[in-house]
Amino acid sequence: MSIQEVSMTTTFLDELTALLGERGLLRDPDAMARYVSDWAGDRLGMPLAVARPATTAEVAEVVRCCHQHGVGMTPQGGHSGLVAGALPAADGQELVISLERLDRVRDIDPVNFTMTVDAGCILENVKQAAAEHDCDFPLSLGAQGSCQIGGNIATNAGGLNVLRYGMMRELVLGLEVVLPDGRVWEGLDALHKDNRGYDLQQLFLGSEGTLGIVTGAVLKLSPRPTQSRTALLGLPSVQAVIDLYGQARRDCCDLLTAFELIPRRCIELAMEATPELRDPMDDSYPWYVLMEVAATGPIDLGELLEQLLESGMERELVLDGALASSDTQSAQLWQFRESMLEGQRRRGEHLRTDISVPISAIADFVSQASDVVMAASPQCEIIAYGHIGDGNLHFNILPPTTLADADKKAHLHELEERLFEVLDRFKGSISAEHGIGRTKQAPYLARLSPLERELVAGIKTLFDPKGLMNAGRILPTE
Ligand SMILES: Cc1cc2nc3c(=O)[nH]c(=O)nc-3n(C[C@H](O)[C@H](O)[C@H](O)COP(=O)(O)OP(=O)(O)OC[C@H]3O[C@@H](n4cnc5c(N)ncnc54)[C@H](O)[C@@H]3O)c2cc1C
Image 1: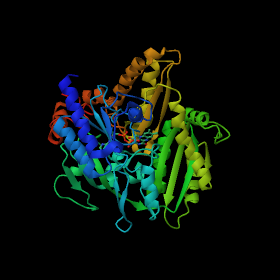
Image 2: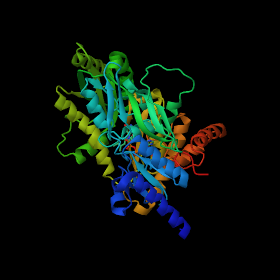
Image 3: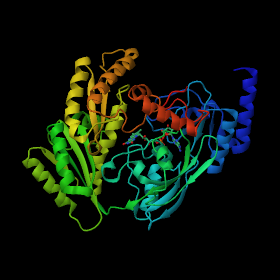
Image 4: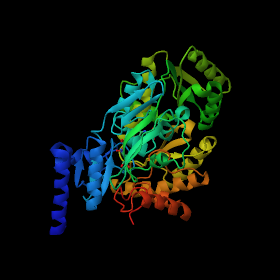
């Protein structure tokens, strides 16, 4: 850095300190350490500094200052996104803008079934606040204890209950956004119907912090279910899982809230990560389904599930099952779903994917993709699980244990390319959950048509002509 650049940076940081105070701007490397790695332990470079504004007005001031000085910005929520979108660049030139101090629930309207929140609210706290008003904010995912509403919006998060409630896109009615030049777009409407022209708000859903910083949101609530039932079922094949899903959708209709595919290996990984967990059934099965139904009012959910299980057994789709008869038992069954992620994380470097195909093609896809991957790397281990109701799979791959650490990344990259080639045959998506960020950029760009690329780049330029807001995520820097 030249003397002139150092002096400009010092002026810029002094301006931010004057704006936010010592508590609002971190410059010490030790204090900044927790802002440079994500849930998976992936790390990138050091930020220039970490700004921690506490209000929308402060966010706007910080962004205005960055815009004026030409400083790049990285909006950051709970850093649980898994494509390195919220991590600062390696060159130490980006300012991390953490939303963690914008954590107020602004208003709850239980008659309109809406709540207005700061974007830095942690998802679990939002769910809790809704529940206190006998309402439900139905987004549920493994990272809900740390991820923030702003991060959920920026990644259009889905989770376990998409098949009944939809993704974040369907759960947001209004937004407040600080644009890359510091102007504030005030779109905090709580309207269930609104057809005025282009839907600006939807552009920010899934925009991964590249178009602006979300500071507030109006969320759509649902009535809180008064009862739910959970079952873990053992099945012989992925095709049986898909056939059972078709039956469950018809028999349970909108009462079905979750339908998760889990391979045997994940049950073992869960028991490794949480030793208190016991094998849920006497025998083990190649595939499991963790499903839940929920309702408000006098419906016998136990009977509904038992009938489904009975007819599933008659059709030889279901081999065995464990029905939870209490909330504690239900929580134990869900513990398998949570602990298997931790078990997988402990296995070290592996290929994580979040792909989707049409539900009816899942079994075929798993079979073809497994064949291709195993032919290319007979010693690797495939761990495929996912949200069946959304056609969303995590087709993850552990590298051969015999492979040297230094060679694992390149090997997994090659397997990812082969996997995505199979996915293309099914017209699937390379990113159904986590977005593009930095890590999925190459395969994303390779699949964009020239027209799509022109439109996407045009949207970015319209909002952020200087290219300062989360540059290099989704699209490369020019
Ligand atoms: C254990 C685990 C389970 C998960 N399960 C699911 C799942 O089931 N379904 C699913 O869809 N996803 C899942 N995810 C990934 C999911 O995207 C994130 O958990 C969550 O939505 C990201 O929120 P965050 O606050 O941590 O965002 P971060 O990781 O901090 O940021 C993610 C992106 O959003 C941007 N961003 C953050 N806050 C803002 C803001 N206020 N304004 C503008 N941009 C912002 C960042 O710049 C970055 O590009 C899971 C992740 C983990 C670790």
